[in-house]
Length: 292
Image (cartoon, rainbow, N blue to C red; front, side, top):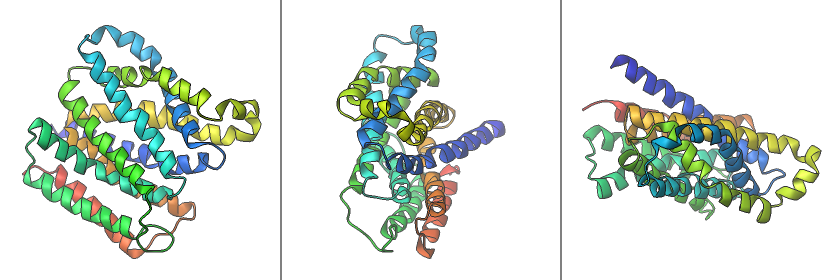
């Protein structure tokens, strides 16, 4: 049991580092690339990486799983991966990482309402403390040091709601499948959609013809697709199997620490209240991970 818990925490921290780096990579890619181009290319690259794994594990999937896996791909990948770069055309990477911390809140609420999930006292206390910390970070994020009611932040909030839905879909409808099977099918199955967006709704083709000018930004998207999508999603679904949806979604409490740190290194501002919010987030993670 101790080894299992150690593995779970190790995977959680690793995942937080990978996904916490995603906002700054998106920010760097947006210097020259289009938001739709980033989302579509990220998912297309991930699809090609995961295709061999899908072929190997295809027999494991039952006919009744196809629809849920496809919906999981749409809800957990397609829509959120377009919402984030759109949002970051107006908000900074640290704020984007911070807003993602709303995911456990939505995962718990949806689990309680639709799947009769019983929230423990520590779940509730941990989420409340973490949510307060997140609120402080949101309130005092940005160069002005005060709250900016930027509608683009709502794109990230919408993405976290979809993540919360997907967490419960995977836990309650796909738990009999291996994580690599869930990941590969849900992402590869949406390849026609992402290819259509990439070539017909984004300037990718024009950028490809001038590859040398865009190669650095395209490299950032390559990292997002291979490491931040394919590998990270496999780790994430393994976490759900090892522990539960609430614990797995706690990665979004740790992600802001990485996102804000990288944002500061890149010149984004941070203040004392944000640091206090980060401390509250870590406290919430610790309490939520404890048994009653």
